[in-house]
Amino acid sequence: MWLLVESLSEVPTVVSEDDRARNFRPLGTYLRTGVRVAALKAVAVVQRSRRPVDVAITDGGVVRAAPVFGPSQRVHAVQLGIGESDLAMRPFAAAYEWIVGEPGKPLRSFWTDDFQRMYGLRQRRSIAAPFGLADVFQRVPGLAEVTKAMRGVYDPTPGDSFVNEFLARHDDGADHLIRSVRRVIATEGRIVIRGVDQDVTARLDPWEATYAAVDHDALRLSLDRSDRYAAMLDLRHGGVMTWIGSRLPEVPRAVASGLEPFLHPDDVDRVRADVTAGRPVATEVRLGLRNGWAPVAVQLDRMIGHGPTVVCLLIAAAAERRSGATDDGSVPVAG
Image (tube, rainbow, N blue to C red; front, side):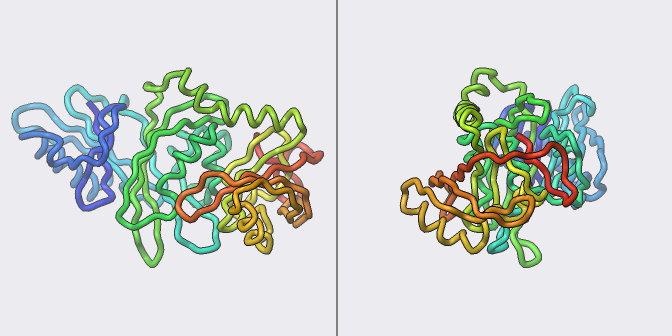
């Protein structure tokens, strides 16, 4: 068997056994006798040496251990193979880090190359290049699934830990089931979320995948037929969480990713007040399009948020757009 052991706290905890969830069970109580001793030693050695290691079990056999690195080369987790385990056959796990808790600024995250591969990116980025909310949630094909994926990202409290499972859709259209393990940490005067995700697609029921994405797919079809698009907005700052539809606008890359606001900062308070009242609103706002801020007639409706975070759905008429990147670095958002 293969255990995924997160190592971001003082006590290593088991979060998966093969593809089965084991929610933060202390490694020292999960295993018994000589296997426990060897496993604890293996985790400690991997954390120090930052390289794979084999540790002999006193009554025979071996524990094989391999690190899962985060973007800063910190060991976020250790994969432990016990019994007949081949390093090449271990489950696919990859790590990431969110920078959160900066008032008025959209969240940003950093992904390892393996993490980008786990989420099926066609075009890879440097580990040092930040990703925004839309980069993540654009690959979560279901509004209810987005809500699950948000858990632990909004209003985080240092010391909190979370395990989520949600559907992710690769750029090639393939659906994957992801188990995401997150721990909230206060460090250097800011709050970060460090985590490790595991691909558990072997447990994915195709019918469940279809059902999970039905709300998103139905809305996308309706928008396409009426020549409109939608953006899910975080009304703390006006950044995009995800885009819906095929007729999406050309926007600067940072706006497409959710790293910069789509909704003008001076409009955020007004929109938040309107949608908090709980009724759909038809109004005009300024949006960050290819040529700068432009007034656009939109429809707004409140969606489920987390804690005090207000999330709204913005719907606007599609505009003619060119294919490919523009001279000023703006891009048509990927549908």
